[in-house]
Image (cartoon, rainbow, N blue to C red; front, side, top):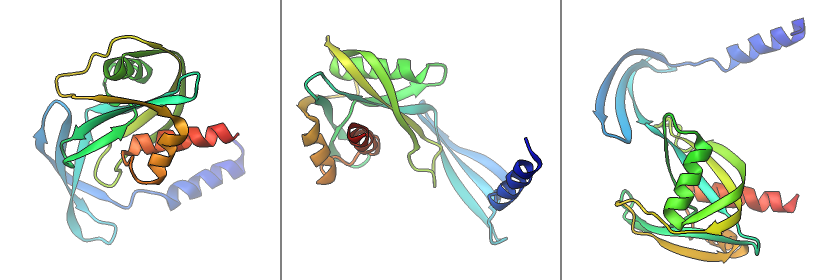
Length: 194
């Protein structure tokens, strides 16, 4: 690294340093999917405070399955926390120790019965970085083969097989609001324009 690069890196790390100080931490709640902790902090303004953090024990995984005709598969299900019915791309959790791509393949098969010969990462995201550490990885799956769906006991799913343009319009009209689905569909729309 040249002298100018070292100086720039030092200025950038100083400019973007962490203004929060953690003085203590206590675990509040834990289950197989999440853990909640409360940190005692010194805020950026110097005042004492607390910060609640939700730790996700799995990575969020999404799959945009696109067939040779340009149709995609959406999964519909009731989402308990919001008490709404939601159309989404197939998605789920990837536990520690499982490779994200393997988790994506598993989720696609479980929810739709599909398998794909071609995979491409579409993007990554932090889903709610003001209160959680949840990370998402979402993929494009093509060269699809139909098999038998294997939903989990917590899932009562419906499948839609629709033209990609219809799914994109559902995002633009606010009919699809799930974050990973919105990101995956919009990213794929941009890729198609290149």
